[in-house]
Length: 263
Image (cartoon, rainbow, N blue to C red; front, side, top):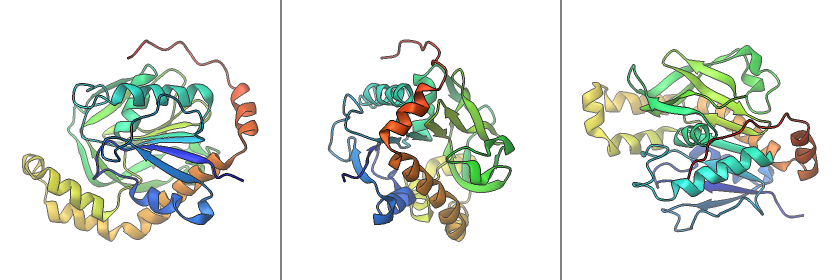
């Protein structure tokens, strides 16, 4: 039996699958990963045909900065397709912003300034029963944050799953199998160190201690691996569901609201 295929869109080399890659690559995950994007040297496909899940990762560009990243329109189209077809879909940071933008939401620069480093998020009690966030419902958990933008307006029908004081829409679900997370569940200490190296000027402007930010993330790695590694495992489980079961569940959902045209 062929393993379900997970399509991963990677925007830049230092924003890869990280912890998720470790978990999804284990034999027991039961899925196969295929990475596309400029650093991978593989073109974004025009359809999710042949794939069983989609993950869109983070990046330094904005969700509609097509002049800087000409592959973004094709990626937004895949996110819309994932929602419409009920294919398990996960957008991380930029990926979440793209998911919101492509389906009728809005993204803005955070008025109170960025979230950077290890910070707490509150998973709402009503997340109980959600395939990914259900086990975390009602808890405050730590996650790596690294964003200057946020999805301040979610698409019609989206359900908020987690929030923080600075960012209400830390995690949301759209339809029956699409999730957006503003934080970085895939990031551990190595990734944080690479991001610090990439933007030392930004850290100076923010008045943050680079070494302290990275040290906090490294110290929290066991907890991060348990919490967000578990979420990666649950995403793999959703992906392994029989296509017939996904189709039946999706057919029972109310019709998606009309969405704006977005190239």
